[in-house]
Image: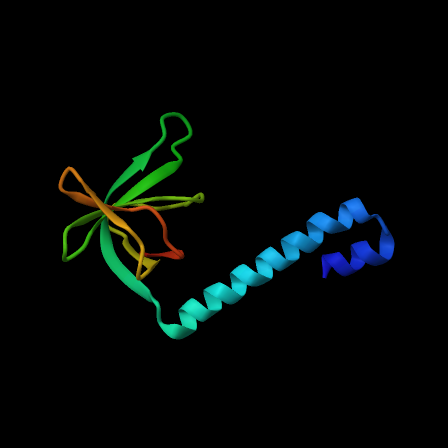
Length: 119
């Protein structure tokens, strides 16, 4: 939509090329995610938050530790979370082929599709 406004208003090629590349990138990523979800190629992990790792001064959440049936899972947080507390139920949607690493008796998942917080 924005690309159409830029094409009609500016007629500047240097401004349009990054917008066209971004448009195709976002459309391709959205289509890929839709195919994954429609095909059921994801897993849903649900657990209780047992620990929250935060930064020093700004108290930004860096990682969440979940208690699952299989053990403890550490999940790094990619975006800002507000009002998260220990004891909340967290649902994580991950790809089936997501690599899982073990360190110090807990599992680490580095990438996920979405995170849902239930109080």
